[in-house]
Length: 485
Length: 139
Image (cartoon, rainbow over all chains, first blue to last red; front, top):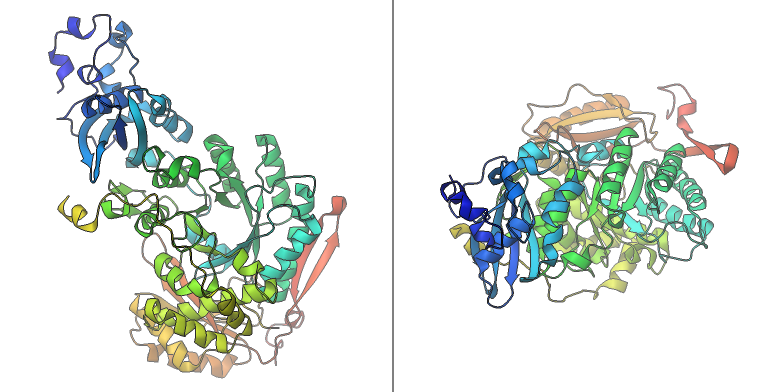
């Protein structure tokens, strides 16, 4: 089955240093099992380092190996536990980097633990000296492993049922300014936005409990605003109360309080860490609470193509860890996001089965085995004038968050919210009638604005705002390559 | 006030032609269209009364529109909504839901507050119309 068993074990286990590829971490004939975890890394070896040896080293350092031969390997079924680099291929258009496919036996991972999975796959190996850079591009998580996770506590379908909102994207806004408002003034923004027509408002990632506004004060004023807006509209409303805090005890205290005052949703930041996220997910599941995740911090390791972890991998981990909402990019807004790559993120959140689609950065077929779906959130620099593009790109199952695009409306926050809601409903109506919204979008918006002054004003103010910059994280493959592959 | 439940409540009331187009969209997606009515518009009143069963077999929007006209004849003073139900695996729920009929006057909701300890407030939303018995609320 592999080279090691056939080789004289005296050679293999003689004390000293040997190449990783000769230690069993490179097995070009290996056929991954259905139960294997498979990772694909983009590796950029140091000058003069053979890519196959580099791939074997990554396999070794992310599984059983250390820098030298150890005789204690022989006390274990070591071949099973060795990760196996089995395929290395050049990255199209990038002469010094390679895609390395590495398979890991399922026994290497603790069931239901993102912390354990990541401690192996992105543990020591990212600082390994023979590599200039290393990026985890994608992972195939076997159904056997997926089924050890609870996944999102609520999921897209149940969230819609609970909110009684169907057939259109949900609308939200992040309260601005992010910092400095008192609880009383903060609640004013929430009330105006919800009454005007949004479904959700949102704490920003860095709103926790600061001198200008303690968390408890914010929660109480926000729930006054939510309940007032519900009574004014007859619709269920929500505001993501950010429970991110220094300790789990603090977070549980804040989440319990949010529950006790009737909130339908709480929020956490990615920076709290994988274990804390899984703990909050279990809490949310016990308490019928929608769990919103703000991906604060991710760009430090997702944005550059040469080194780090692709966001598609983070999105997979977060769906397993169990969050109901995750920010996944806007394409047309102010933050990083290539359209084809972003589509891959959305599919990871929302599909039950994803086929390999290299043009979207998806390297493997992936089944989620009926795990609930995570609702992607598009937030950052979007406005009503882009509604046709947003609906075309993302479909119905998304939260569109217009922060500045609501609060910055010349006639106030309610008018901003109404403009967004009217634009959205008009666009959904037109799409369902069979109209070509991508091309007729501006016309559809103009027609809707004839019966809605706030929309007319919004279109006037923001009509020329676009963020056209080159993306740093576009796919490596053009569509024809995937058909061939 | 105007309650804004449903997908198209921020637009002017849909004409029958517009409703027909949405119904046909649902049918073309393979969804069963359902007609429901109520005189209790509380946001958490999930179970509106059903006008017959969801129309699993109807392939033409005109058939749904006939039923809607019949429902309006009896319950034209109440809220009526149409929904498209998708029974496919992984969804098995409503896909689209919109109001197609409203009472002439919508008095809205009172928000009652019960003050309790630590500045906590228990909120109750009460529809003014629902203070009368069912059937007498909007006539």
